[in-house]
Length: 185
Image (tube, rainbow, N blue to C red; front, side):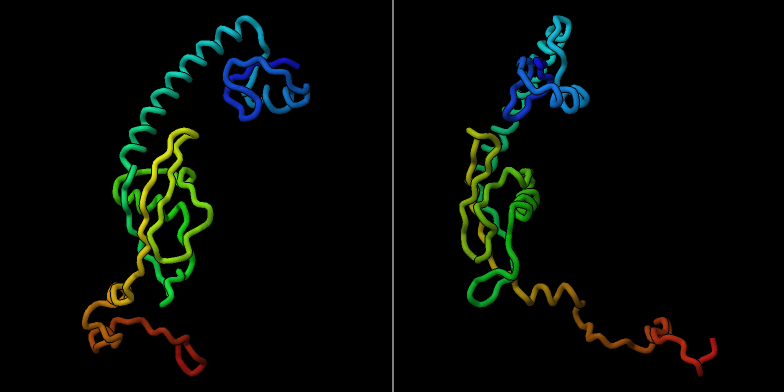
């Protein structure tokens, strides 16, 4: 069955292409989801207008991607992670953490654009590829450094806080013990 594509479909074609597909694929998937239409003259005119609009949007999107690639090319970021004495991380660093570190520096990249063969498991400097398109790639430098346990301890407790409750706080603190049979409720 011949259909005209309204959207780009991987391994099938681009907008405006007339392709031959199996009837079941056309009737059950392409036509109901609005991904394709029958190749009539009226549909051809409508698809051509849609194709021009898509090409304009794609050109604008490409310009934006090139600008983002230029902004991050050669950028260095630092990610702190907990590690043992040998430099092995407790866990790993993946594309989501790298994207979050870039976002903290006001550079926004989707995690799926970050190319990692495998997650990062050691403290070191890594050269990471960011692929915006097949032919548009930028390289960033990621430093993975250990976190300082002193910083984590100071964040969890306030200075001078020894965990003791003074008399004023003791009166306002709720009783955390459940009421026993000898305690009236």
